[in-house]
Length: 191
Image (cartoon, rainbow, N blue to C red; front, side, top):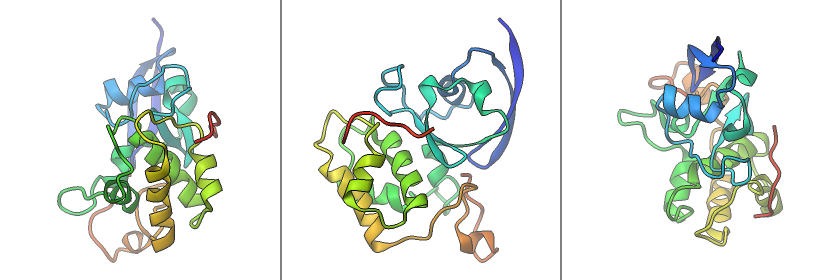
């Protein structure tokens, strides 16, 4: 089995590791980096449970070779909350999913949150149609998507400081707040 050195940034931290040429990004995140928030669902790019952000864009980690993201910035669900406050508080979007009951069993939630995060960075006040389109590649077997869409709308309506790709809010990047956070388009079924 051939291996190569892979250099990338994961949740704001530079990482260098040896990976097999055929290793999937999902396996590297879960097995080598112990970032288990990214879920393994269908193993075929159909469900969206493994959605992560690669350079700010949603990407399905179960069908992405790790070597394809050499030198890129990867963000996982853990990166949205890492370092926020003393105990790693949730991001505004994660909090909205909690408060608006956008999670049921929770298995699809990390992928849904990451897809929604990419949308909100690109379009801070999306329409319901834009939200549904952004989440179209993410399946949830527990809900009818109403609470998930409402969770994203709640963040869009109340506003929030956008979190740039490196995980720092603008006031944190300027040095006015606490510690730094560590922080492919997908199409599928309509949500």
